[in-house]
Length: 178
View 1 (cartoon, rainbow, N blue to C red):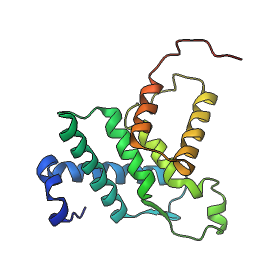
View 2 (cartoon, rainbow, N blue to C red):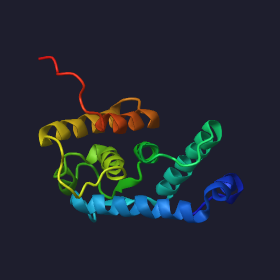
View 3 (cartoon, rainbow, N blue to C red):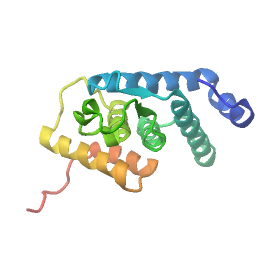
View 4 (tube, rainbow, N blue to C red):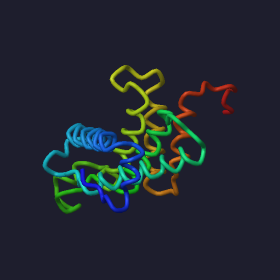
């Protein structure tokens, strides 16, 4: 991970270079697993410079939040939300082939690959995704599709993603209409 020591030295001083490197390794590792899981090895790659940008923007946001709100420890939902937000904005997963390549066309979500990764990252940073779902698969699948769509085509904020995570922990208090 490269950092611009002139502009972002305060992030290293506030969080330590080890924290920045660990976050880079976390995102890079999860992106690598994601590319493999969706069958895009050799077709997609991870742009390390853009992962660096994700890390810098994430830590800059968290530094501002901590200073403004006098926060000591950042809650996991906030960490996941800000990380996923910057992944969806910076788009570190890059295709190595043209969109009309037959191998790419086999993967229907190629146009929103980073948004798909951001959804996966958001959930996997807060929930144990190795365990079985606690909810109906159809409902969760719909949730993922709507979230991916929102990340790709709507104005999204890290705060909105944080709210989404808190909403996932909420048990319905009323019966649905219809």
